[in-house]
Amino acid sequence: MKINVIFLIFIFISIFGLGQKKDSLTADTNSIKSTRYIEPDPDGNYFYVDERPDFKEGWNGLYKFIALHLNYPKRAKKEKIQGKCFVKFVVNANGTIGKIEIINGVSGCSECDAEVIKVVKKLPKFTPGKVNGKAVPVWFQMPISFNLQ
Image (tube, rainbow, N blue to C red; front, side, top):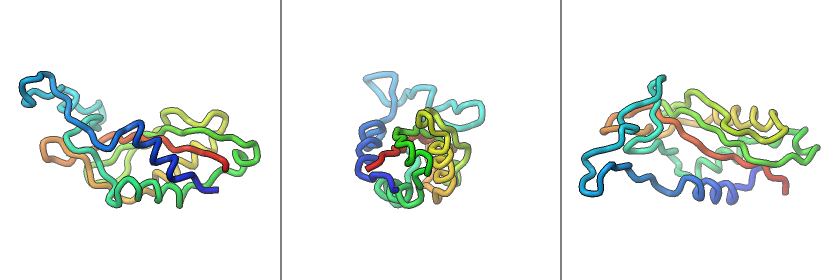
């Protein structure tokens, strides 16, 4: 059973919004940025950047890709397990997918979480995120819902 794409898009937009604004420490000038733009995590991956990574086919394309490749686990269907899996992954400086982590999985369904990881690994290249015009690895987060219809 495929995921309800409209619901996923609504959830994504409500959580992450359509755009991201830069963080500033002063109201007078945008020249002083928060250090979170400057400092990556210990592995060199950024959380906040000037330009977020972007799926080349846009957000609708991202959710279409997920809907086409995500399979509802048989046990989850049989036991009528539903829920959201929050996943984060690194979009590397070359646009490929790097490290993948489940932030909060579907309760009682490790198979759902494994399915999300499987699909994220299949994602095609993104346009990478940038800091000061330079492509950098960036953490990317999104929810994926498992809903029976």
